[in-house]
Length: 80
Image 1 (cartoon, helix red, strand yellow):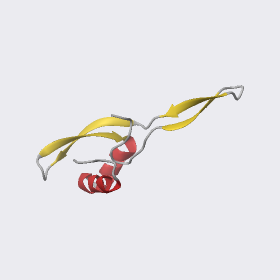
Image 2 (cartoon, helix red, strand yellow):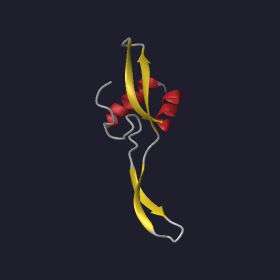
Image 3 (cartoon, one colour):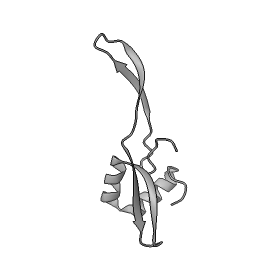
């Protein structure tokens, strides 16, 4: 599975390594991803998500169910 957050849709970005002499080489900036399990009390089961730190904070703020519905509408997650 690729390095994409299933809640926020964050993915790797491309940029440059810049040396002291200002020489530029390509590099990638990866999102801060974690594998985390959440319990869905309505369905009485656990789900496993690959989620960024910003996604964890978003779930803490809004709640799991509204965040999952929003992610499904945007197409970041197929089914939960």
